[in-house]
Amino acid sequence: MRETVITTETIANPKSHYGNAKASTRHFITQRVTGASNILFLALLLFIVVRLAGQDRADVVSLLGQWWIGLPFAALIAIVAIHMRNGMRETLEDYLAGSTYRLAMLLNTLFCLAVALLSAGAVLKIVFWG
Amino acid sequence: MSVRARPTSPHLQIYRWTVTMAMSILHRMTGIANYAGMALLAVWLVAAAIGQDAVTQVNYIYGSWFGQVVLFGFTWSLVHHMCGGLRHFVWDTAAMMEPGQREAIAWATIIASVIITVLIWTVFVWMA
Image (cartoon, rainbow over all chains, first blue to last red; front, side, top):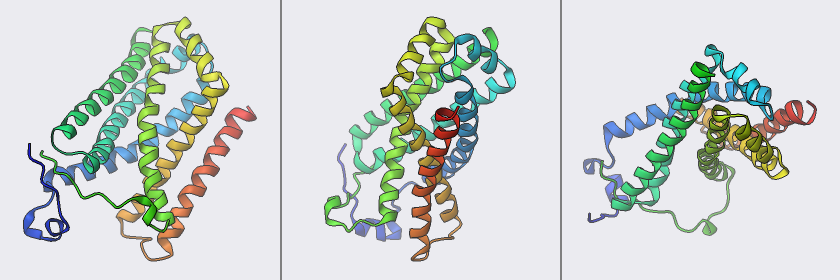
């Protein structure tokens, strides 16, 4: 793919339709909605880590195994992963383009998916199977 | 969605540092640190799901002095990114953007993040 460099003229000219209107708006809204949700995640994370840091597996199961703690925690982790992927996309867009960008975005998606599936999966395992 | 090469800034050294610029860079850096740090949470949770031996090993690593330094840094990184996000929520309403105000809110993020982090570790780790 041939990479065209965006000049200041491209950005200044409203007719060049610099950027993708729909995708960019969705990105903006997603990042703010998930960011607000992440405040709840941090509060719950602080509560959980303070209670469980350095503790044994039985203590982890007795706290996270309660569904009203485990299920919201798993859901908030999944939302964090969306925020991570969206935020990293912003960074990648600034420095990479074309096929390098697409490869980096693939790795970004895989990492965020792995974090979400492993963390939320581990919590769900503890909730449903102890 | 095709992404075109974007113009990049000249080297950082040519700019006079401002606090808003420093907080912008820190917001991106702490975002990347949080991105990597989430792997630490994943490791701990997976270990807890697997069994006591795995939990013991993770507790040993995270409880070592190096682990504690990393976790302290991770705490500050999370708190700073949250404060930076709250600052962006304020700016989204077009408030606090005038000269002086934007510098004040930028200073507030770094000061608040350091105070909150030290407070969390003092109350829940050092005095617990």
